Length: 288
Image 1 (cartoon, helix red, strand yellow):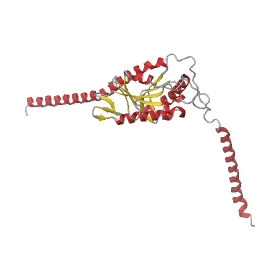
Image 2: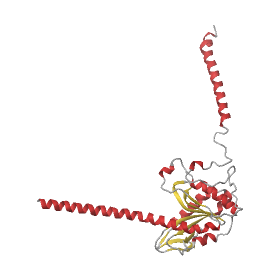
Image 3: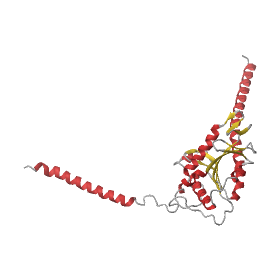
Image 4: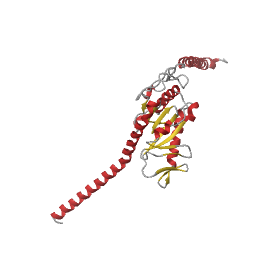
């Protein structure tokens, strides 16, 4: 092989290497596009849901999924119509609800409906029992703005142009005082760290809470749990969650119990010492 052939071979190998790197780059860009599109759709839906804030609704964005520390909920709303858990989707193609079934093209998307129901159940599990029946699931389709339908399992499916109207149309079941209390409770339960150190492994952004800009003057914040009071939730301070007024500090009753244990231990030690002395110094000479 001559010098010219060696240079040609090196050039060919270099061209193949460049082509391989370009394919890898294209694949990486293609993999990030769905995530980018999803993030854009979530932001768009969040802005749309913000229209409900002046109308007495509180909004939580991107919060923990109870029971699943590495998963998140896109949006949770609390307002006169109850609690609405919104799952944002950015599906393309023809999306419709037909005969109670959610379809994308020729495929029935029952898994998405089951996921929305699971999110709803998770939020219901942390709500006080009297209000659990007021938690509703909703799937918002960012790419189908005019879509609206309800599945056989009572999951509403609405596009971005219909979602506000669908939520506003819910019958009023809560007064503003209870709404504020539920919002504060969910703010604590859905934005605090669920397991020690789990935030180091999470890829979910911290929860964002959006209260109404101008709540009514009579909107108090009653405590929905015994011994706790409703207060604004501080972001980024998960250790303070649950440490509200009315809670007794850890170990409040532990000191008397510790003293009792200590006294009992000393008594047992004295009895043991007396038995050893008796066995060693007295028992051998007992019968003599």
